[in-house]
Image 1 (cartoon, rainbow, N blue to C red):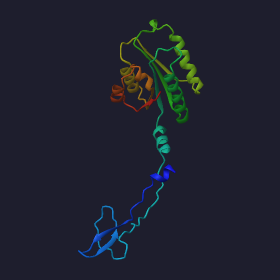
Image 2: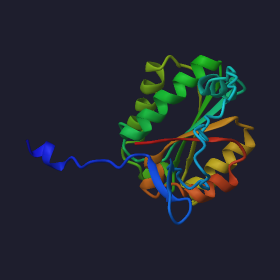
Image 3: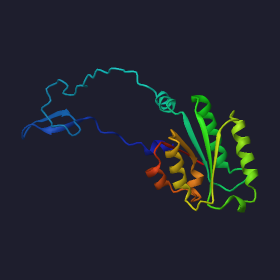
Image 4: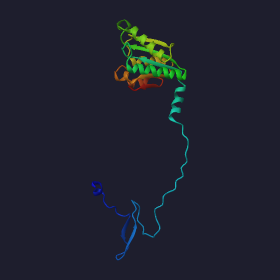
Length: 199
């Protein structure tokens, strides 16, 4: 009943227009169109449009073509967690998945500003890296350690990517959020595409 009270009568689509001083003529109401005298013929016509359907390539196939040329992938590890953080584990899984699918080689670079001797669980971290990559099906990969050089991780990633002529760098956004890697410098100085994985 409350709904029925809200309904209001709608005015008809015809409006009354004075043709001269003594007669009134009804003509169709046109939204924003110039009004003409009503002649009994509809002045409103629907335009006929011809539509041609074309098959477009899906975004999936375009993405697949972009990764098909990847033959060497870099997995930089910047966190100090000996068992790897969630973001690094995700990056390792993505790296192994892409490398296995497209037949690419993997290079892992462990980066820390402290020297190896000052890192208490360095061997545990290396074992964890080997385990996570073997879970993805990779037992053979290149492992580089850039420890205690005093360089920022972003600069090290750029140097390694340039020296080894890498095709792709895979990195978790966790490294950027934790301020280990500078995203702006990464985008500017890395000579190959960088795949940033969300948390």
